[in-house]
Length: 243
Image (cartoon, rainbow, N blue to C red; front, side, top):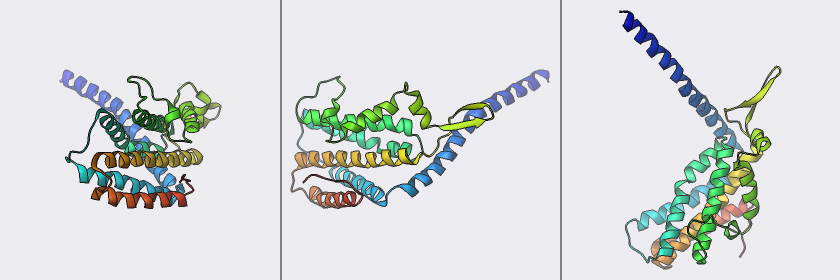
Protein backbone atom coordinates (compact mmCIF):
# COMPACT_ATOMS: atom_id res chain seq x y z
CA UNK A 1 0.00 0.00 0.00
CA UNK A 2 2.82 2.37 0.95
CA UNK A 3 4.76 1.46 -2.18
CA UNK A 4 1.67 2.15 -4.30
CA UNK A 5 1.22 5.57 -2.69
CA UNK A 6 4.88 6.44 -3.25
CA UNK A 7 4.63 5.30 -6.87
CA UNK A 8 1.51 7.39 -7.47
CA UNK A 9 3.12 10.40 -5.82
CA UNK A 10 6.23 10.03 -7.96
CA UNK A 11 4.12 9.60 -11.11
CA UNK A 12 2.19 12.77 -10.27
CA UNK A 13 5.42 14.68 -9.64
CA UNK A 14 6.89 13.55 -12.96
CA UNK A 15 3.67 14.36 -14.81
CA UNK A 16 3.44 17.84 -13.31
CA UNK A 17 7.09 18.53 -14.10
CA UNK A 18 6.81 17.44 -17.74
CA UNK A 19 3.56 19.34 -18.17
CA UNK A 20 5.59 22.53 -17.89
CA UNK A 21 7.23 21.72 -21.21
CA UNK A 22 3.85 21.21 -22.87
CA UNK A 23 2.60 24.49 -21.41
CA UNK A 24 5.72 26.33 -22.66
CA UNK A 25 5.08 25.17 -26.21
CA UNK A 26 1.39 25.88 -25.83
CA UNK A 27 2.00 29.50 -24.82
CA UNK A 28 4.44 29.92 -27.71
CA UNK A 29 1.86 28.53 -30.15
CA UNK A 30 -0.90 30.74 -28.75
CA UNK A 31 1.16 33.89 -29.25
CA UNK A 32 2.40 32.70 -32.66
CA UNK A 33 -1.16 32.40 -33.95
CA UNK A 34 -1.95 35.92 -32.74
CA UNK A 35 1.22 37.29 -34.36
CA UNK A 36 0.27 35.65 -37.67
CA UNK A 37 -2.95 37.65 -37.69
CA UNK A 38 -1.04 40.85 -36.98
CA UNK A 39 1.45 40.05 -39.72
CA UNK A 40 -1.16 39.28 -42.37
CA UNK A 41 -2.97 42.52 -41.59
CA UNK A 42 0.22 44.46 -42.41
CA UNK A 43 1.43 42.53 -45.45
CA UNK A 44 0.70 43.97 -48.88
CA UNK A 45 -2.02 41.96 -50.60
CA UNK A 46 0.18 41.80 -53.69
CA UNK A 47 2.84 39.96 -51.69
CA UNK A 48 0.32 37.31 -50.69
CA UNK A 49 -1.08 37.04 -54.21
CA UNK A 50 2.35 36.80 -55.85
CA UNK A 51 3.53 34.20 -53.36
CA UNK A 52 0.56 31.96 -54.14
CA UNK A 53 0.99 32.46 -57.89
CA UNK A 54 4.66 31.53 -57.67
CA UNK A 55 4.00 28.41 -55.62
CA UNK A 56 1.32 27.38 -58.09
CA UNK A 57 3.81 27.73 -60.96
CA UNK A 58 6.30 25.35 -59.36
CA UNK A 59 3.50 23.00 -58.27
CA UNK A 60 2.17 22.85 -61.84
CA UNK A 61 5.61 22.06 -63.22
CA UNK A 62 6.09 19.29 -60.68
CA UNK A 63 2.60 17.85 -61.19
CA UNK A 64 2.91 17.83 -64.98
CA UNK A 65 6.40 16.35 -65.08
CA UNK A 66 6.22 13.91 -62.19
CA UNK A 67 7.78 10.70 -63.45
CA UNK A 68 8.36 12.11 -66.94
CA UNK A 69 12.01 11.73 -68.02
CA UNK A 70 13.72 14.77 -69.47
CA UNK A 71 17.19 15.85 -70.48
CA UNK A 72 19.65 15.22 -67.67
CA UNK A 73 23.24 15.82 -66.64
CA UNK A 74 25.22 16.23 -63.43
CA UNK A 75 24.66 19.98 -63.60
CA UNK A 76 20.91 19.62 -64.13
CA UNK A 77 20.69 17.12 -61.26
CA UNK A 78 22.44 19.47 -58.84
CA UNK A 79 20.30 22.45 -59.85
CA UNK A 80 17.14 20.38 -59.43
CA UNK A 81 18.27 19.23 -55.98
CA UNK A 82 18.93 22.81 -54.89
CA UNK A 83 15.56 24.04 -56.19
CA UNK A 84 13.72 21.23 -54.38
CA UNK A 85 15.60 22.05 -51.17
CA UNK A 86 14.45 25.67 -51.52
CA UNK A 87 10.83 24.72 -52.19
CA UNK A 88 10.77 22.23 -49.32
CA UNK A 89 11.58 25.02 -46.87
CA UNK A 90 9.14 27.63 -48.19
CA UNK A 91 6.37 26.73 -45.74
CA UNK A 92 8.70 26.70 -42.73
CA UNK A 93 10.32 30.00 -43.69
CA UNK A 94 6.97 31.75 -44.14
CA UNK A 95 5.75 30.36 -40.83
CA UNK A 96 8.77 31.62 -38.92
CA UNK A 97 8.46 35.10 -40.42
CA UNK A 98 4.70 35.40 -39.98
CA UNK A 99 4.69 34.00 -36.44
CA UNK A 100 7.41 36.17 -34.97
CA UNK A 101 10.36 33.77 -35.10
CA UNK A 102 12.53 36.42 -36.73
CA UNK A 103 15.89 35.18 -35.50
CA UNK A 104 15.32 31.69 -36.89
CA UNK A 105 13.75 33.14 -40.04
CA UNK A 106 16.87 35.15 -40.87
CA UNK A 107 18.95 31.97 -40.80
CA UNK A 108 16.50 30.31 -43.21
CA UNK A 109 16.52 33.31 -45.57
CA UNK A 110 20.30 33.38 -45.46
CA UNK A 111 20.34 29.75 -46.56
CA UNK A 112 17.85 30.54 -49.34
CA UNK A 113 20.25 33.20 -50.62
CA UNK A 114 23.11 30.71 -50.50
CA UNK A 115 21.03 28.17 -52.44
CA UNK A 116 20.41 30.73 -55.19
CA UNK A 117 24.09 31.65 -55.22
CA UNK A 118 25.00 27.96 -55.53
CA UNK A 119 22.60 27.52 -58.46
CA UNK A 120 24.35 30.39 -60.26
CA UNK A 121 27.76 28.87 -59.51
CA UNK A 122 26.64 25.52 -60.91
CA UNK A 123 25.27 27.14 -64.07
CA UNK A 124 28.57 28.99 -64.60
CA UNK A 125 30.67 25.87 -63.84
CA UNK A 126 32.46 27.51 -60.91
CA UNK A 127 30.87 25.61 -58.00
CA UNK A 128 33.33 23.93 -55.66
CA UNK A 129 32.20 20.87 -53.75
CA UNK A 130 32.13 21.41 -49.98
CA UNK A 131 32.65 25.18 -50.26
CA UNK A 132 30.11 27.71 -48.99
CA UNK A 133 28.57 29.46 -52.03
CA UNK A 134 29.91 32.94 -52.74
CA UNK A 135 27.01 35.32 -52.22
CA UNK A 136 28.29 37.59 -54.99
CA UNK A 137 26.67 35.08 -57.37
CA UNK A 138 23.27 35.43 -55.69
CA UNK A 139 20.60 37.48 -57.53
CA UNK A 140 21.75 41.02 -58.20
CA UNK A 141 20.90 43.35 -55.34
CA UNK A 142 20.60 40.61 -52.73
CA UNK A 143 24.17 40.86 -51.46
CA UNK A 144 23.35 43.80 -49.17
CA UNK A 145 20.69 41.69 -47.45
CA UNK A 146 23.11 38.84 -46.80
CA UNK A 147 25.17 40.84 -44.34
CA UNK A 148 22.07 42.04 -42.51
CA UNK A 149 20.70 38.51 -42.27
CA UNK A 150 24.04 37.24 -41.04
CA UNK A 151 24.09 39.90 -38.31
CA UNK A 152 20.75 38.70 -36.94
CA UNK A 153 21.37 34.99 -37.45
CA UNK A 154 24.70 35.17 -35.59
CA UNK A 155 24.17 34.49 -31.85
CA UNK A 156 26.99 36.83 -30.76
CA UNK A 157 25.01 39.99 -31.64
CA UNK A 158 23.32 40.30 -28.25
CA UNK A 159 21.83 43.77 -28.63
CA UNK A 160 20.31 42.93 -32.00
CA UNK A 161 18.87 39.67 -30.70
CA UNK A 162 17.33 41.43 -27.71
CA UNK A 163 15.60 43.93 -30.00
CA UNK A 164 13.69 41.05 -31.60
CA UNK A 165 12.62 39.41 -28.35
CA UNK A 166 9.83 40.34 -25.97
CA UNK A 167 11.04 42.44 -23.02
CA UNK A 168 10.06 41.68 -19.43
CA UNK A 169 9.92 44.39 -16.80
CA UNK A 170 8.82 43.70 -13.23
CA UNK A 171 9.96 46.32 -10.76
CA UNK A 172 13.73 46.30 -10.77
CA UNK A 173 13.84 43.07 -12.74
CA UNK A 174 14.41 43.48 -16.47
CA UNK A 175 14.88 40.68 -18.95
CA UNK A 176 13.64 38.99 -22.10
CA UNK A 177 10.96 36.37 -22.69
CA UNK A 178 10.86 33.25 -24.85
CA UNK A 179 7.34 34.21 -25.96
CA UNK A 180 7.47 35.63 -29.52
CA UNK A 181 6.41 39.20 -30.19
CA UNK A 182 5.34 41.12 -33.30
CA UNK A 183 7.95 43.52 -34.69
CA UNK A 184 6.27 45.18 -37.66
CA UNK A 185 9.29 46.58 -39.50
CA UNK A 186 11.18 43.30 -39.22
CA UNK A 187 8.18 41.21 -40.27
CA UNK A 188 7.55 43.31 -43.37
CA UNK A 189 11.20 43.40 -44.40
CA UNK A 190 11.69 39.65 -44.02
CA UNK A 191 8.44 38.76 -45.77
CA UNK A 192 9.17 41.00 -48.74
CA UNK A 193 12.62 39.40 -49.06
CA UNK A 194 11.03 35.95 -48.79
CA UNK A 195 8.68 36.69 -51.69
CA UNK A 196 11.52 38.05 -53.83
CA UNK A 197 13.75 35.03 -53.18
CA UNK A 198 10.81 32.74 -53.96
CA UNK A 199 10.38 34.51 -57.30
CA UNK A 200 14.06 33.93 -58.10
CA UNK A 201 13.84 30.25 -57.13
CA UNK A 202 10.67 29.67 -59.20
CA UNK A 203 12.29 31.46 -62.15
CA UNK A 204 15.24 29.06 -61.88
CA UNK A 205 12.78 26.17 -61.68
CA UNK A 206 11.08 27.28 -64.91
CA UNK A 207 14.40 27.83 -66.70
CA UNK A 208 15.62 24.40 -65.62
CA UNK A 209 12.47 22.63 -66.82
CA UNK A 210 12.62 24.47 -70.15
CA UNK A 211 16.14 23.10 -70.49
CA UNK A 212 14.96 19.62 -69.55
CA UNK A 213 11.72 19.44 -71.55
CA UNK A 214 11.90 22.17 -74.18
CA UNK A 215 10.37 25.61 -74.47
CA UNK A 216 7.44 24.38 -76.56
CA UNK A 217 6.27 21.90 -73.93
CA UNK A 218 2.62 22.56 -72.99
CA UNK A 219 3.40 22.79 -69.27
CA UNK A 220 6.05 25.43 -69.96
CA UNK A 221 3.67 27.50 -72.08
CA UNK A 222 1.03 27.60 -69.36
CA UNK A 223 3.35 28.62 -66.53
CA UNK A 224 5.09 31.18 -68.74
CA UNK A 225 1.82 33.12 -68.84
CA UNK A 226 1.42 32.79 -65.08
CA UNK A 227 4.98 33.98 -64.59
CA UNK A 228 4.11 37.21 -66.41
CA UNK A 229 1.08 37.55 -64.12
CA UNK A 230 3.27 37.10 -61.04
CA UNK A 231 5.75 39.67 -62.33
CA UNK A 232 2.90 42.14 -62.87
CA UNK A 233 1.65 41.48 -59.33
CA UNK A 234 5.12 42.09 -57.91
CA UNK A 235 5.48 45.29 -59.91
CA UNK A 236 2.27 46.56 -58.34
CA UNK A 237 3.81 45.77 -54.96
CA UNK A 238 6.82 47.97 -55.78
CA UNK A 239 9.28 45.40 -57.13
CA UNK A 240 11.37 46.42 -60.13
CA UNK A 241 12.61 44.15 -62.88
CA UNK A 242 15.23 44.75 -65.55
CA UNK A 243 14.05 44.14 -69.07
